[in-house]
Length: 131
Image (cartoon, rainbow, N blue to C red):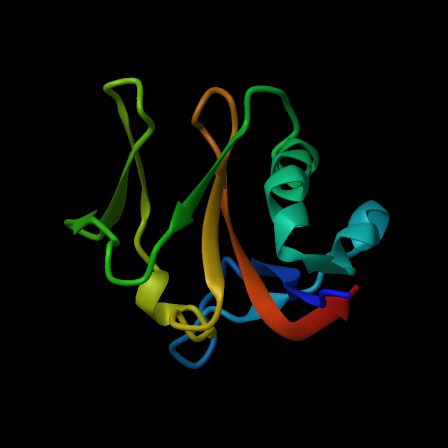
C-alpha cells in the first residue's frame, strides 16, 4: 500500500485597514463561514473561483496567485498580466500582510469588470496522509 500526502490550507481574507503597520488576516463571517474550513491543496483551484463570485458579487471573476519573489510592483501597484494582453493593477500591500510569503499562498480575486478586488491568503494547516 502506498501512502500519499496532501498539504492542507485554510483561506483568510486580508483586512482592508492597516493596523500597527500590517494588514491582518480575517476569518470569513456571515453567510460564507463554510470557506473557513481546511482544504486540501487540490481543492484551492475549485474553491477560489467560487469564493470570488460570492465575495465580489458576480460572474467572470478571476483568481491570480502571487508567487513569492515574482511580484511585479510599480508605483505602489501590483501589476498582473491576465493573459489577454491586458493588465490588472491593484494596490500593493504584499509586504504589509501579516502572513509569511514563504509558507503561505497569496491570491488576488478580481471581479468580472475589474472594478473590485480582494486579497486572499491560504495559510498552511499541516499535511493529510491517506492510503
